[in-house]
Length: 212
Image: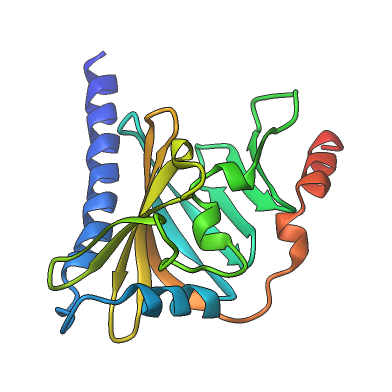
């Protein structure tokens, strides 16, 4: 039992170190001269077509996951979780699908437009839209924007953290309609290049999994 406890503590310390390193990477960046405007942030998101890189996710229950994220705007994102987490999350064709390798019932599927993530995956991001932004602050290093669907605030909101010079998305926190919170810290992102649409094909992924 003592060996198991020591092993468990060792794993938790390692995971906490990963999160600490990811957060330090944000806070250690040089201070921006001024707060980024909503127009500048909207312009940046609209110009962001494809990106991929590592991410660290802090879940509502305090657990931590890592993996690789693929973004292809508009409307597509893929979260590939590293072992031992067998999950896969895809957004494409207007839906979000959550795959769990431990389940034989297929993915759980939700409308993308009912999740706060749809705000940054929209074809035309306009954070200046009335009642969309509920918070817009700067700590001298980062600019934080809290946004929601102005027509459906009960869907929750997304809190986006950006650095400047150049403008880059570093982190987001989703507060969903049921009161849960999930934070995603982005690592070094490779922006641009081609990402196959098949990575975001929910039906294809489901078929591939049934054939395994």
